[in-house]
Length: 329
Length: 175
Image (tube, rainbow over the protein chains, first blue to last red):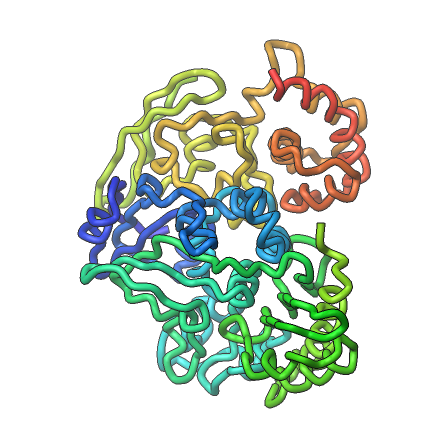
């Protein structure tokens, strides 16, 4: 790990002031310290934000839930309101990492974690995300875990989070603070596709800080599923994951949310596909139609073409489980 | 326990140290640390508490699991300076004199190890898991312990040991 200076401010304004151009905020540290040990990240300064007052889960006036950026992943997953109203979020969080990591990792940090692409992590190989212009090692390398949707010639990495897939499906809002004040970013606009700027994962400015993630009232608690498919049954990143939420009017679909993980540079959603499900019968045929539409334009690489069919089947299964209410309490 | 002096780093490197206090295995300690020292390296290299193991050093194996304010974490992915004021329990702090902690005793009785390298992390993790109170069935224990790898494959006996110690540990965390 490189040398760096360290400070621990007490207030958000103080933290924003202290952060230098080459500095980074640290909360749980589970991803940042790992990247520093690999020399992928070499900040000259760490601003420890754990003393900031961003550690609460509160009900909003709109009837939703506001989760402070410093609340630990395990605390969110086991919070009574999350278990009751947003079990999709609880299931997604508990499908990720290990218990120890969930005890350390923060809500804001989960959003900002970096891809686990082997080439991004290996400083001896080219990577446009780590070193813009150096090339992409994954395009013609080991690309079993890589993207099938939304990738570019510059980068085929995927976003690794499970929690973010649920937050995308639930249409969360990310609250941030910066030198020029506060703003809110809809979840769909928070993460970016790689395009020709794969070094940018998100639309958070370097001098901004996440303060909270807000959930709207609608939680799909009766009909939801988080289906995660991976190489081992626990403690592995998703090859494909699906966050599904349905509202049913008898036997037809009243509302639908589908977000995919493990397939793109950001949690993947198509609101048009979800809208097309409204009024359709809650049957496998409808789910297959949605899956085909969601995966339209999917392109695999040498080792990951299997993900297209895997994702298709996972979407159908997740929607079937959601409709059957098998996960509802 | 005597804190050994902080190791010298390269002379050209920036010199910056921070003073921290920890309640470490029941004893209050004052330490001076460089910000880039992980909690794991502080324990092993500076305080000679080598019971906590360095396996992968990347949060993937769980060998470095310790309890911070009663919660299990990976000591390799935390900076010592970030733990100022915390209560830290390592494998060395579990026994009461010569009397083993119920989880330690159960690991011995159930022969829940082969090489033993993952054992301190397994034991601290299991104690943390029981305190969390979310694992009741065998499958739930397996899932909740998935952050602790055992390359000897002693999982069957590890599971048996945790099940054996669970009632005694639950009694303890209620006190």
